[in-house]
Image (tube, rainbow, N blue to C red):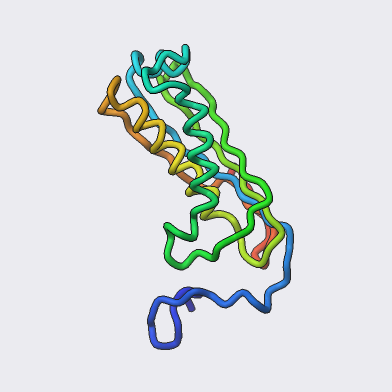
Length: 156
């Protein structure tokens, strides 16, 4: 049975009130590929809009905190940690965006981790689109999660 569907087949926010509070965390990643010119502007911090990576990092953190406002059946969570980081891949003119979310709570933080990388990557697109409107976002996925009823796992 799907947890977000009630006995009448209607969308339903899961009741987590009786679940135990446990330490939970999750990580996610996404990539944005761009032209060499746009990538070089980011690398050298020469984008006309300013500190592209700094703004994208803050946007990703804000995105994780606003996840419940964006995804209708997500619970509002009191996140204790959100981190957004970047790996610049000069050979492929792409940026790998990673996130990490953590809390002590009754439900997992996978959606918050995914929202963080999504919003950070979209912010990179927004800030670099004048240099390259043909950028591609790809490879968004959860890379690990820990805690909760289903336990821990990590993508190879």
